[in-house]
Amino acid sequence: MVRETAISPDDFIYPLFVTSGKGVRKEISSMPGCYQESVDEAVKNAREVHSLGIPSVILFGIPEQKDETGSGAYDDNGIVQQAIRAIKDAVPELYVITDVCMCEYTSHGHCGFIDKGEVDNDRTLNLLAMEALSHAGAGADMVAPSDMMDGRVSALRTALDTGGYADIPVMSYAAKYASAFYGPFREAAESTPRFGDRRSYQMDPANRREAMKEVAADIAEGADIVMVKPALSYLDIIADVRESFNVPVAAYNVSGEYSLVKAAERMGWVDGNRVMMEILTSIKRAGADLILTYFAKDAARILNS
Image 1 (cartoon, helix red, strand yellow):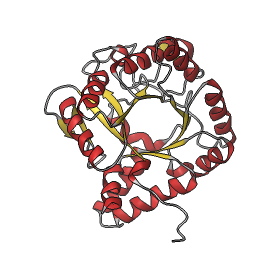
Image 2: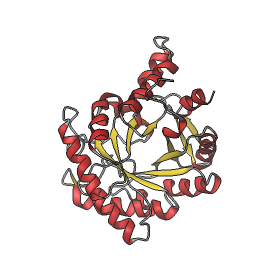
Image 3: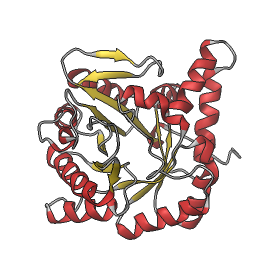
């Protein structure tokens, strides 16, 4: 009766990794219980997600071929575009969000256009706008730019508005840190950079005030929801954003946070379910309205029981 924080399946967004082929369901070695799935298998997963009362999924694509400009990202028959159409057809009530970034699609693994060994921020914006338009055209309910290029929210908002998709909201990865917790995701999405790293466009983990500047800029450019990523090591940032801005706040409980719990659980060192629920509660308690998490299905089963 006096519990201050409550979580429910309504709070969760479940990530799906979609790949080419048919009948493909390949477990990600560093993320037990998570899979690279072909579109038909992703549809089955989406049905299960919906049956558990989880309202939304976010899609990440693994294209059959990659190139320097990540053309698979804005191909109207790309892997994510196929998945959007199939999931919306099979489970129309499920809210489909798409990750808008180039790293899964580029041969070099960076989040933007490369010029002389460096990411060209402004040339990347056009590619991201094309990707968002392609996702919206396929039926996505929301787009979520994760690239951390300056000005990308404005570029997407303008492209969507002028392209006839003014009602499509933007969930911005507003405070995305250059974190070591992303390692398992890069296996899952096959997006490890071939050279260098992403510290030139992602945030320094030591910086707190900078996050407020990044979030404020994205809101000014038209972001409808702002995200903090990762979640667990950045609960102070989530709390700061919640206190400072009157927009919905999302937090990404990232792959490394998930994998650490799964590994410790397999070793018998922790009660995995209790740790999972404690982590998710802490993220909600810090101020997140929405939680992107690989734990979503497991947590929903507990909450529904």
